[in-house]
Length: 92
Image (tube, rainbow, N blue to C red; front, side, top):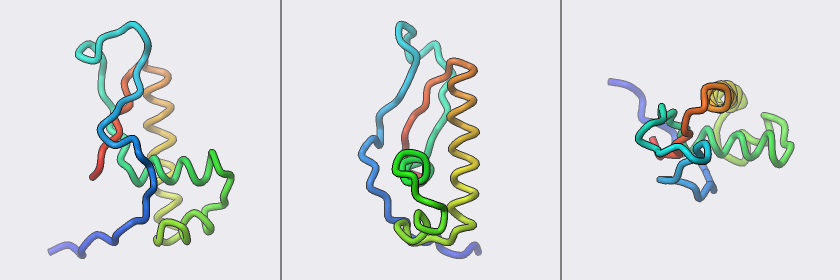
């Protein structure tokens, strides 16, 4: 049985929303899911300019977890921009 997931402090308010290219219906687009903790780490590190250690403290997780989430979020965001896909913001 896996260890229970640690609660992460996230303040993002975009859950259930999507970011997509203009002029294309959502049904025609590939959808890439960006989880709320990935969005939060993007906000803290890239928008607010916090280092990974500070972001981890704010979220209540380790720096290693922040690094893994940040890599995943950046990869998904780049993929959506390059491929013209929709980013859908969801809770895990």
